[in-house]
Length: 78
Image 1 (cartoon, rainbow, N blue to C red):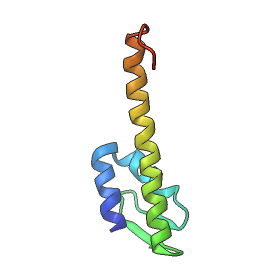
Image 2: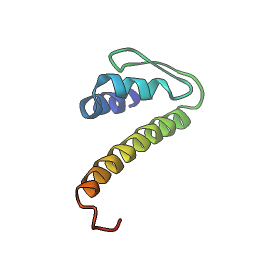
Image 3: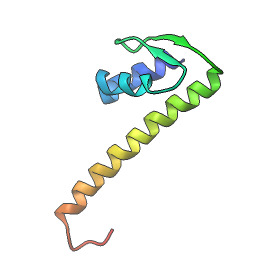
Image 4: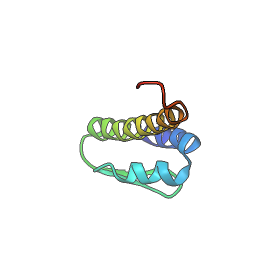
């Protein structure tokens, strides 16, 4: 399941960002292709941290996209 989540993010974010974020999750070892090599610790905790990492990243992407649109319309309050 972890590998499937990472592979889905590779399609969305690209391999470098998706794998880098996954490697930042404590207890998770990931290959360059996005395959999970090892999970240490409770798998449910690792899964939640992986999801949180991608959600945080996606939130930033959305925020940056919206902010760039607001810059085009300086008269609109946000």
